[in-house]
Amino acid sequence: MSPVVESVSASPGHTFSKDVLPRIRLLAGLGVEGDAHMGVTVKHRSRVAADPSRPNLRQVHLIHAELFEEVARAGFEVGPGQMGENITTRGLDLLGLSAGTVLAVGEARVRITGLRNPCAQINGLADGLLGQMVRRDGNGRPVFLAGVMGVVVESGVVEPGMPVGVHAPEGAHVPLERV
Image 1 (cartoon, rainbow, N blue to C red):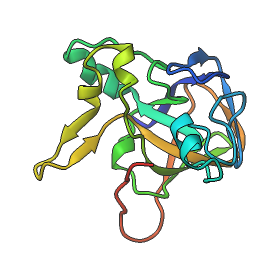
Image 2: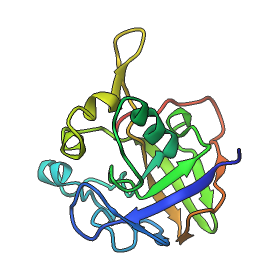
Image 3: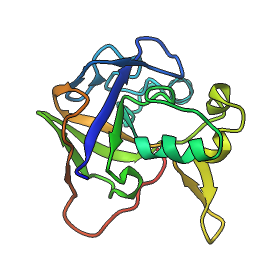
Image 4: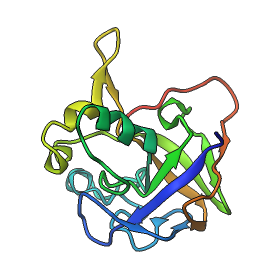
């Protein structure tokens, strides 16, 4: 299956979940038009409290739809937008991308900056869900499963059904880290 956009979401308020929409507009250097996390500098409340002048590396949040199916097998019902993502994909191993990978959706381009750091707010959606978003690898290190973050490098409209092109950066694969 070729990678595709399954759903798009945004919220003007700092809510955990976002409204599923027919389309979103990505704005270069800013993020999702009308979304609370849009901006050149950080908008996530904890990061604003720490240093509001830091660059916003979390303009767009992407999650793979396959994650919802995985947590459903553990008894959790989660759908698009509910975990705060802007773009839900299908057929794309987001977590396995190299840092700096550019995703092309229509005219829009999103450069992947890192992994979403899942927080305790996830348990507000369903008690125990946070435990499904963080696992341990063979060496005991945490593995974060709650999607990836990116910045918009080219503006454009994104709608469900659009194909997702993947453009890995040149050089060796650089594993994603939390941003």
